[in-house]
Length: 443
Ligand code: SAH
Ligand code: F3S
Image 1 (cartoon, rainbow, N blue to C red):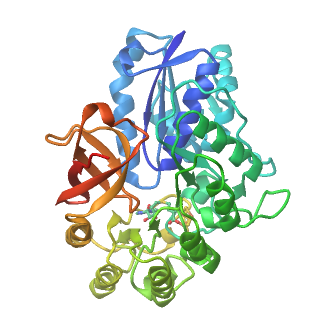
Image 2: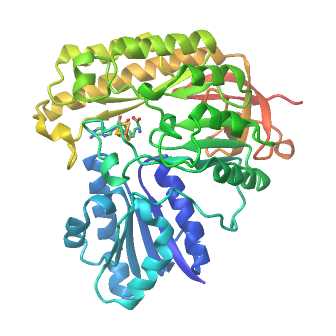
């Protein structure tokens, strides 16, 4: 077999896409290698959500140049959102590139590779058909499934937040037929998965477009939770505008649906939220969270935050800190605003100086550290249920896994009795940033 070396940047959708490409490539005669020097094909799955993500990709391809010089048959491929967005610029900046494949057409990777072998000029495979049904054909699995598995349920995004490039790189929302989703889940469970994470840019919009028979997102959750062997269920990401009362009820009713919600808010200021085109207010968001907290006691919350959006004043920024404190997030993904091609926010002047952006970024990170530490205290001395994922590299803690609230738990225990995929009770002895440390309790 030939060998493929892959690297993945960006979101969980990209991680899932890379897994899928690995499987498709296997069927085209490529086995995965961890050594770039051994590869016949190097494939980098890219992200274009912020400018920094792009820079990393260019320097990575720079490091592949000697390999291509030593072996002109080596195929260099670039996939993902950057591929979709920046085709011409990529071909200019990376002259060695043989193939560009967009995130919406990864099913064609075998065909695109055939074309690379048939023609001298680089292959650009990015055209997508908005009318085609969203389907991920079943393939025989090649690797043992880990305890936690991603399942794509919807692609694209119609929300058009003013700062975001995703609707341009991944197209409009389209849902996958529920039967196909259930079938994939059954297959994953049969291969060893205990936890299913439903994936999409905006999973709450599931069922609005592309299904033969309409089905709401919460109905899909009830359906998946009902499948035998699904011990844990999660989903990401949600948009507050599509977050329904029915979904709050699903958290209350469904045993496998874990006690954690990632609900991006982006800003704690109404003027900025409006400029971001998030279509809701701070008050709306807080009401939603209050209702969720009262229906699902102890639910853990995490979010995405952007600091330094065009025109954001210091006091508007402080509104974000206040909101974070009020909600008490257990974790946040915090970003400095980065202007992206094609997005409406480009019309607004990116006028927050870089130094000020960094300062706001640091203040937000510091606050989140404090909130995480405070949040973690509620687990101190308690027993938490951990889905064992495997070994941890950290000293003094030999295993790792997550509790229902999605905290990483590092713990010691008897080697023989702890296997990936088991759910075990762990007593928490220490809170480390956004992780817990403890020891497994003999059962
Ligand atoms: N679909 C998700 C988010 C997708 S992008 C949602 O519903 O919000 C992941 C995160 O990257 C976003 O939530 C946002 O916080 C951040 N992000 C997106 N575009 C950005 C930009 N231009 N600059 C800085 N951060 C950005
Ligand atoms: Fe991007 Fe907003 Fe959709 S952040 S992915 S346009 S919900």
